[in-house]
Length: 119
Image 1: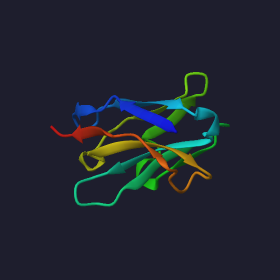
Image 2: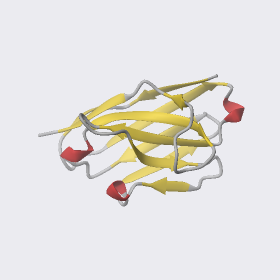
Image 3: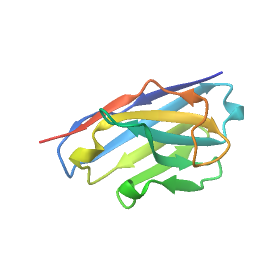
Image 4: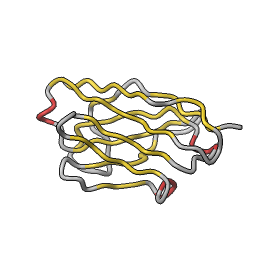
């Protein structure tokens, strides 16, 4: 089993920045790909960004140039640096792990952290 714990969400004004963190524990040697997904009210959960253990990344078109995913394998932690935030970025952000690729989600999910972008 793998446990994922997110942190770093909150309220931020449009144009502001936030950094999300996701710490993994448990049978973590099985993890290659990790990612961030988000779900806004009334919408489906969608991929935001994903990263392999080797550092390959995949970003959604909606966040390219604004969000950056990174990971520290020694700390078993993945980060999402979010800049130039927009109201439409408001959502619950979920950490995900265990997928065999960067395009689909794996079986392990965190409980989510709320990001609200509002003035």
